[in-house]
Each structure stands twice: as C-alpha cells, then as structure tokens.
Image (cartoon, rainbow, N blue to C red; front, side, top):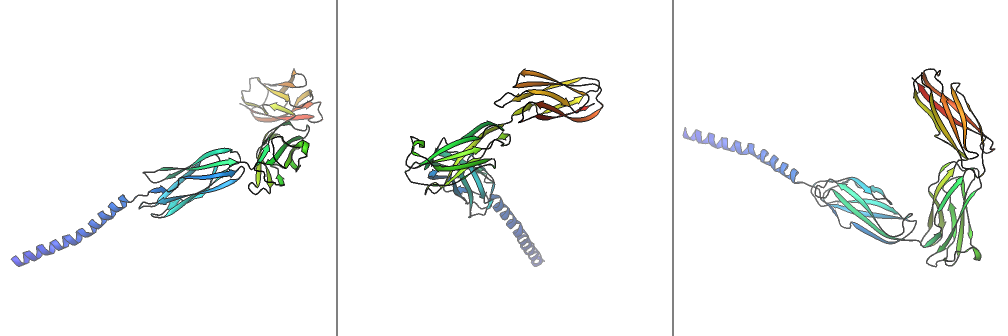
Length: 346
C-alpha cells in the first residue's frame, strides 16, 4: 500500500509539472510582448544644404532607424511652408532603417533659411521628431524687379512688365526660353542694349518682357514666369506673377437674392454698379424679366457709380422664383450686364 501511495504522489507531481510548463511559457511570451517597444532614432536630424541657387528644388533624405524590438510606425509627416514631402516609409521593422524623402522649394526664399519637418511615430518615448533643413539661398542670376504684379482693367490696353537679368557671379549666360503661367500671357526676351542695362548689374544683361492680353479673364493672377538659362549653376529663374484683372463694370452683390419672402410683404434690396474703366460709362436703364419686380436706377456718381433699387411686389405667387435683371449702358465694351434674381415666396 505504501508503495502504491508513493507511486500515485510521484505521478501526480509529474503531471503537475508537465501541465505547468505551457502556462509558464505563455506568461513569458506575454511579458516579452509587453516589453517589446519601437525606438525611433535619427542619426542626422539636421541637414545643411549650404548654398542653394534660388528657384531650385533641393531634394533631402532623412534616415530613421528602429532600434526597438517592435515595428516602428510613422503615422504622419507634416512639413513646414516651403517644404514638400515626396514619400516616407510607414513601417520600419526592428533593426531596420526607413527614410523620409522631401524637397525644399527655394522660389520664395532668400538668404539663410531653416525649415522643419515633423515626423509622428508610435514610439511612446519619442512620439514626434523634428527634422530640420538649413540652406543659404542665393541667386546666381539676379532679376529686377524680381516680380510681376498687374492691376489692370479688362479690355483696356495690354499690360507689360519688364525684368532685367544678369549673372551675380560674373558667369556669362544665355536665356533659352520663357514659359508663361497662362494662355492669355506671352513673354519675349532679348539681350539688353547698353542704355537699357541696370546700373547695378554686371556683364551681359537680358530683358524679359511679360505681356498680359487686354482680353484676359477677370480674376486673380498667380503662379510664376519660368525663365530657363544655360547658366551652369542656375538653370531656372522663377518670377512670381500676381495681381488682378478687374472687370469693366462690376455689380455688387453679383446676385439679387431675396431669400425667403412672406407673400403679403413688399421686399426691397439694392445693387451697386461700379465702373473700373478709365473712361466714364453711363448706365442708361434697367429691365427685369419678372413682372412683380420693379427696378429703379439712381446715379451715385455719374459715369462711375450707380445704385439699382429693387422692389418685389406682394402679388408674387408662392414658391421659389428666378429671373434676370438686365442693366444697359452706353459702353461698346459692355453694352449690357445680366444679373440673376432669385428667392422664395412662402
């Protein structure tokens, strides 16, 4: 009997030991999983590009190492103004390297600059990493005035702005082409004559004329005039183009919106007609396609500003309505203007 009891105890102990082994292994694996963490390390968080020719796009590459034991995730990369992030490695395995690839646009930069890129990761100890791009932007080719700002009225004379270019480092160069930012613009270029040169310039100088067509559409002007050269250190010169093409006549607000009108009420509103042309333009009359809408013309400043008073009569039927207000002038440029009228009688 004693022998049987001892055998049973030994067997039970052996089973207990065997059954406990998987539990110990599971606990160990869980502890290791909890301990596994990513660790983001950037060996070179600041890149100094030195002198960069103005107008160039300098490419930059940052290396991020994962010195942790779990995958490192890059959740977002946020560049400062002037920088563009081309792409980045979203997941970096333990012991591996990933890259953040960016470019620096120097079109609107000058002199010493410092731009940052913020990288967001799942590394709890280092959730955001600031990368810095330093540069010293210098134009090897100088342009005066260096910008083209138009403020013109449509259908008046052609707008024209001239740029004078020369090499700051004394290197001789030629202009190969001048690309305009819009189809209603054109650019011409030629070597400057002696009496056309800028007194502060050096060596051979070039003139680039940017022309804006009289019939350019109304609206803001943006983007750049891109000049291509054969200068060995600066192939392109970007001239920012800005300004506005104003209409000959403008109506404010552009739509006569009565919104919601109670059927029994008389609703009134008004429009202002402004003349931006050089010459005076007389508004001669106003007509409406809606029978219930009466329009009265008032001269605020003869030839320059007029007010159109509108009155919606109570007999207008219920429901939404639309119509057209026609404003007539004595100008061959803009003999008439059409203004939308809308609202809803409730």
